[in-house]
Length: 304
Ligand code: GLN
Image 1: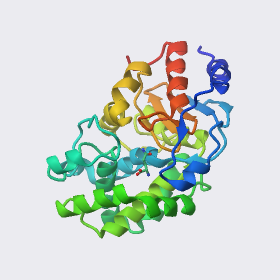
Image 2: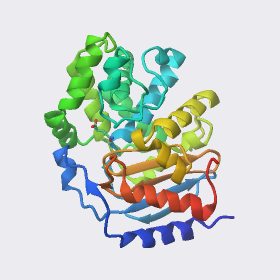
Image 3: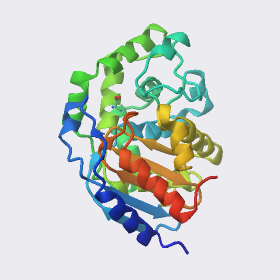
Image 4: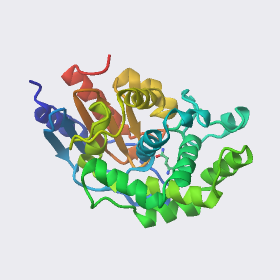
């Protein structure tokens, strides 16, 4: 039996004192206020044991980690038809780049870059009765936790400075790959990114990607093939132009957010979430990546 608690405690104490923690995201002004010294880790194993260290119970902005959850709700609802509007190839570009979108006639490379997530958001806006509420409700059911909510300040802060996403949505619209009103889709997207969760709640939400599509309560949200596809997308696209580095160093499917969170899974073994708000140059949590590299090295567990 692997002593996850001991390993997580060790990782936490090894990283806590590291001086270069990266830089907190500042292009969303509300996120610039976050204390860069926070460091939380939570691991949920396949039989539902929980292991925590540091600031694992503090809420943070999940940002782009929400893209995996919106994709899941959309995929479960609409099936393979979604791949007509968004591709499944890594972009090798930063999360907010638009050059490929024009080159490829408005079909985003994958659903985990911003343009792809905006197309997924558009599909949810088309098919959910009350899009924001229904998406939040999906996350609450996945985690069995009704306390999870949006942070309106963060959503508004991003709306005020979201010029690149506004450009992306308009570009998609011009190619006919956004069916709803641009502002409505952006409002949904900024809200999904503003959802706040702690490491434990997020590890519970990602439990289904390690458990063949079933959440901890046993309800099935995705079939095995859908889980395979989402995990494949996380591995190849979850860290944008650093997806190769994450696979190389860590060896797990995962997803980062500019709030400093990273969620990752080892299928049939564990889901794990780290939170450290300082980002590296590619916009991924600097210490989070190091923590997960240490986890898969110390446990000798990875998908490879
Ligand atoms: N809301 C952020 C954005 O669209 C999400 C980016 C991220 O977390 N990588 O810019």
